[in-house]
Length: 275
Ligand code: AMP
Image 1 (cartoon, protein in one colour):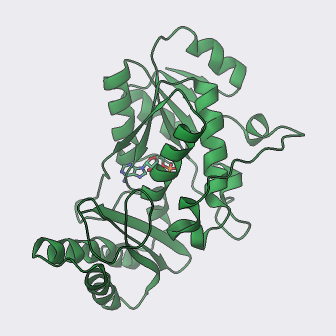
Image 2 (image 1 turned 30 degrees about the vertical axis):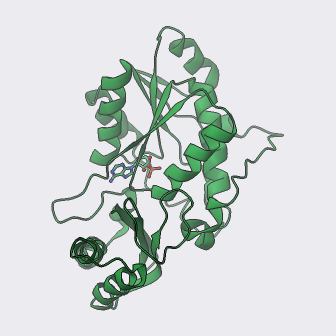
């Protein structure tokens, strides 16, 4: 496995590989990330992982400076998962002096996460467009865990005619249902225990749907009922939406996206199910 810090180094190493799958990450890797690396390797023959905590997707009050970082450990993990190449640039390599471009994806970015984090998806779309250009990957792998991000990136690839297929992979969970996330490391042991409420709330909505409930408002209410049992959980939003447009639904349809964002102290967790 070769680790590159500059675009030039990466391009030189990439030239030796025909097809390449890429997994963009912010590092502090866990099994969720590694499942994407294994799939990229299996489907493309060669896998690249990018590790870059992207400052432009964090608002000034968010956790950019304290976001967990562990590059040496990450490199061991991705090598064991079969990665061929790693691109781990410094901020100045991605955004050198004079850099001045931002991509705005319209519509779907104004809802859910975008409503709470207004500049977030512009930062994500911009860095992903750059990473796909740098890596020249034929496929890029993302996790369903970040459902709205997947919608935004699919739109980015389509609207910019990027020659890269976007592949969305299932959410990997801890044994008690909590979706794996680098940010879980922020939780105290008590908060970690209580954080299973996200999974329990989504499961309650799914059970209602499977029992024949077709009113989206009833599913939102079922989620709020479960969340209310954990008063420490501050609810940012609960949504039952169209999986492509992210518009809130009145009547539930197959494939509907049920999602939520919950705060435990300063830590914000998101999760979702597709019905
Ligand atoms: P991040 O490092 O948080 O930016 O995540 C990098 C990629 O890994 C994104 O496509 C995420 O959606 C994906 N990812 C994060 N957590 C999980 C998980 N628990 N299961 C599957 N994919 C995940």
